[in-house]
Image 1 (cartoon, rainbow, N blue to C red):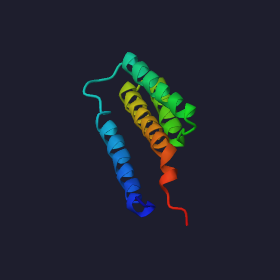
Image 2 (image 1 turned 180 degrees about the horizontal axis):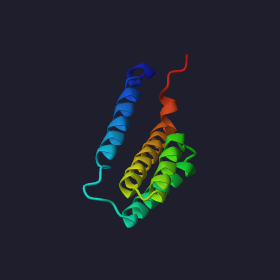
Image 3 (image 1 turned 45 degrees about the vertical axis):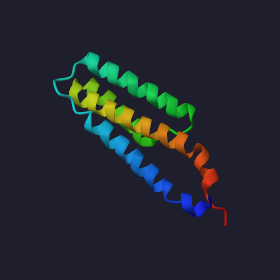
Image 4 (image 1 turned 45 degrees about the horizontal axis):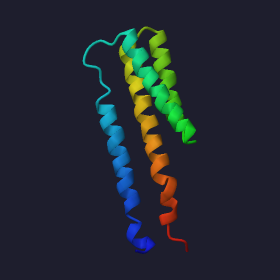
Length: 113
């Protein structure tokens, strides 16, 4: 196989990444009013994903902003928004993990000119 045959797979991976983020965002809308315990659980999950992204040296600033928004909403007592922001941060962190792991070897498939 030559590099030209693989060149379209990067687009497919980006679409997969966007699909994952979209599905995670779709599932982030709370069905019932969220509690402080719901926020703490969602925030802990998001922080764990962000820590994993950090170990891969691929943290996104948008993830940090979503975590900060979650803390701010929780401090204001808006746990619905806090949970939504924490789940958004989790989705972003997981997307950054996917990006880091999928691109770890993909650079070798690039055609050198």
